[in-house]
Length: 325
Image (cartoon, rainbow, N blue to C red; front, top):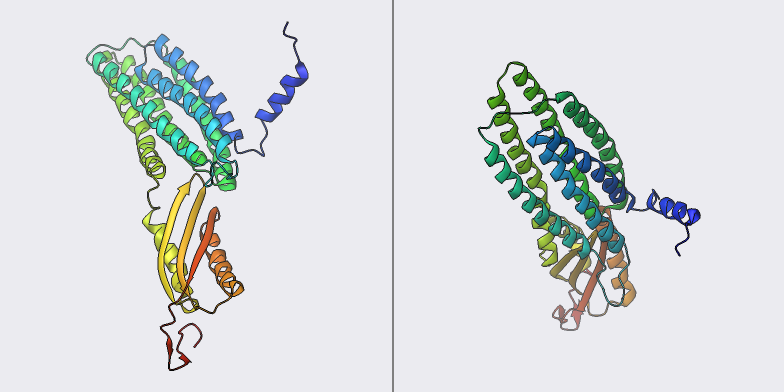
């Protein structure tokens, strides 16, 4: 028979609320999303407000997003090992892509419902409840966003950046919901029920479009990471700038290879070095370039591959090496 263990429950609760862990924010988002989704869908359906119900369904996708984030962040912070040489960061990309697809499915359903209700008179009665719930949600979102920004700066995880961007979009959505409620109350007061329903449906559609922007943007980036596409051009240019700064320290620059796995940016640079340089001399240059790269990209993992020059700078027994001159 199962025995109630209060100590185990308290211990698990403390683990869930451990603010030193990057998983704390996804867990906090999960709790918040459950509350806002449950109340939003219930109040929206009960009061026949498509906009509030739509916002509730968007929050419901945030519940799934938070679960994906908890699993992804928990895995992605693990160090690279024998089985996964580049770490577990791809879990974040997969979670972001799944989140984008989920929101797309919900959006299609909301669009059909909005089109179906166009032209029907609004039957909303209690705007006080709708406005109170929307205002509460907005205040809670602003608080949660401040916490998220702090953790993004601390841990540099793409999944946390995605969660912060989604919540920022949700804040603007909530502002739109609150404006729509106030407009609906005013239109009801003057008896313009058809216009109230029209605005409610149009607002719901605009909310869906707004909600889709962040998942589509980050979903494309996540897909690029899963396919190991070369990092963004601005990062490439920053790396070339570092190489140019040290151009007098090597014979030839051959290529740079990059890939990203979660927060980790893997950078490999191929250089041609003087044929008689020791490992120690090559190591000095590698550390010099590495320090500059880490200044620009703190989560990068850097490596130089040095090959010896073909000694074509030796003429008549004299060395005309540009690095040594």
